[in-house]
Length: 344
Image (cartoon, rainbow, N blue to C red; front, side, top):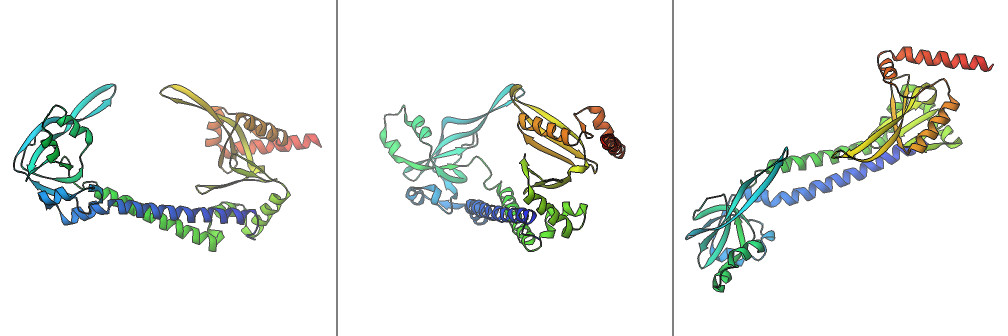
């Protein structure tokens, strides 16, 4: 029973879920490793960095423990600050986020990005590379090259609370891991018991799977078409993807119309998209995105095949369908009966 179209669709979504699980778990691993150093630093706390240790650092990125406390001999401000601009409701505001200090550590100069006005001899923060533009600004008007040679290639960033975002980071890792495991479990479950797939749950509304599935498989082999991600057979409309599964019998469609959506960015038109909307007597709605030509062509074909269906959108029809769907459906059935009688 599971070797036809329905079985193939279930197998395809199960395989996709498996790949999604792999990607999510890999993302959790990468993200976790990226946060590992911060976690270790927070657990151990800041360590004391002396002149020898600071001078030996060539690349702060590979330092496993770079959360440090620095004890300087004296500190002066370079008068260089970092700022942040924000715009809200057309009004731009600016605030100072940090001030660069120079502190003497042994025979070397260490630059510290501190909070504005925070001149001290002891700072705690993260050892990071010294931005080249800061070094250039400080020494651009100085002729004493010895001072520049004494400057360490690293900087201490003491502006923030180190590791304050660690909890959020590991919540994200946890979510990625749980999502990946869920995808794996769902993939295995759908592979071993296809009846648990959302597509089968949608099909079971129309009768036992042992009869419905072979019927659809047979119709699919006899002839099918695809539009907007949906598969059409003689009697069925089937939408099956990783995100959703929806089934509709074509003889239960009672209302169809074209949906036009105009898109814009900052009130500048960027285009228009089109879709076919199909609604049935059970209250189901299928929306299929397609070109305007495809939408018009399908609706014209459907109207020729089932002229008793209501075509075209109207807000009054929307209200009637939502509040009195049974009456809406009964009116369509009566139209169908009248048209078939007239043909005879």
